[in-house]
Length: 190
Image (cartoon, rainbow, N blue to C red):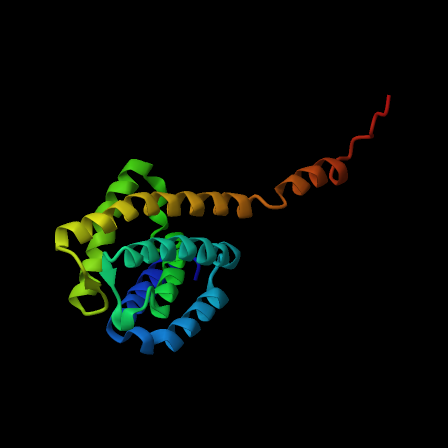
């Protein structure tokens, strides 16, 4: 299953995105179950759990900043709705799985992709009624692009470092065990 998990995650994330945009607060129970289910079946639970925390915190911070400054507004005058926080949790999973391929590119290209894809997602959300823009499209999309030109490379850096750190846990002990327990040579203590 781990071989196909990026594809599964891509489909899963698109279903989550559309359910959030179309149903907003009504999607919250589904989103919570989806997060728990993902953590249950993920081949990289530990990395995903940390990414859920770090990516969602940074993403929520950017959205709160844009909402607080009036770049966009959510229904019921919420600074940030619960459904968007839960969407950020799912995006942390996507960074590790379906968007994991981004880690092969240099940060400049990732930033450019963020500057384009980030605003386009918010524009789609706006057109489907999930968020209102307070300013013109140009100002709003530029502001979102500025956040995403920074956030996407930072997300990829966090993912790469977490993956490296967690995948290397315990490797030092294996090296020690290799020399102490598997050697047939007598120890020379001169």
